[in-house]
Amino acid sequence: MDKRPIGVFDSGLGGLTAVRALRQILPEENLIYFGDTARVPYGGRTRETLLQYAKQDVRFLRSFDLKAILVACGTLSTTILPDLQAENNLPVIGVVEPTCRRAFEKSRNKKIGIIATQASIRSGAYEKALHWMDPAVKTIAKSCPLFVPLVENGRIHRGDTVTETVAREYLEPMLCEGIDTLILGCTHYPMLTDILAEVCGDGVSLVSAGEEGACELKRILTESGSRTAHDLVGSPAFYVSDRPEDFAQIGSGFLGEDMQGSVRRIDIEQY
Ligand code: DGL
Image (cartoon, rainbow, N blue to C red; front, top):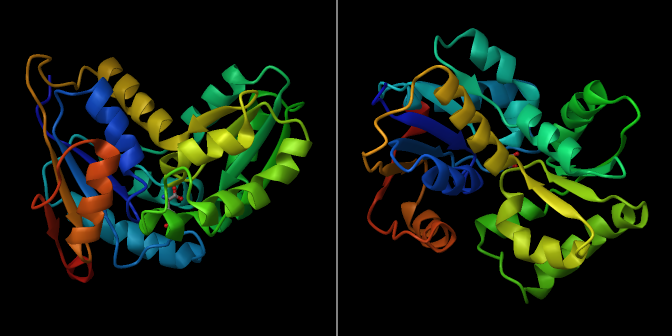
């Protein structure tokens, strides 16, 4: 049994898709969340910049005594995860493999769409993981750089004509190819699930990188006997690197928990 908290981080709001899942499947665990809102978006940046940012993010999180870190960010999971794992003596879990496993299980026709940030799509990491499972899988990948700013601005609800138009433009070509499963490979994208599900229609299963990362973390903590006592009630603490107010407002709506007043700002450049 291990009562120490779990660290979770992302460039901004996206990692809350993992937090929401963790609050459901591991309600007894304490979480420390960091959203690097001063430097969001990460998706168009170089590997060097991503490595520098991620190291700072992890240094901040490790100012707490953590038992594991969930990299609730597709961009970092697809580009620099091995670097973080090599220099940290605790489990550092990414989202790519569990997400691909779930997508592979769900897909019947083995035509799988992947949407993620530019850095993730350039890395080819999701395709590689799927082709490792079965070289015959057909993958269609597309970066969707407008989705992260739309999410960070709270444009996530059905009826938002701007987000709906952007989603149709991004998704229609891959829907024409007959995909039956779509990987939401950036953790921000599951916040757009209502809109994406409507655009894709009933025949396409959506797989959330945030949720699958959370399930993988649960599996790893369970296997290593590192979960806390089941009768405890865990709580999340939220930190950001810029204005807490917008993060709290959009995050509260998404998590269904009032975060106003409970999000603190830190200076990430000090780490
Ligand atoms: N949510 C992150 C990801 O999963 C980062 C998106 C961004 O900041 O561009 O890729």
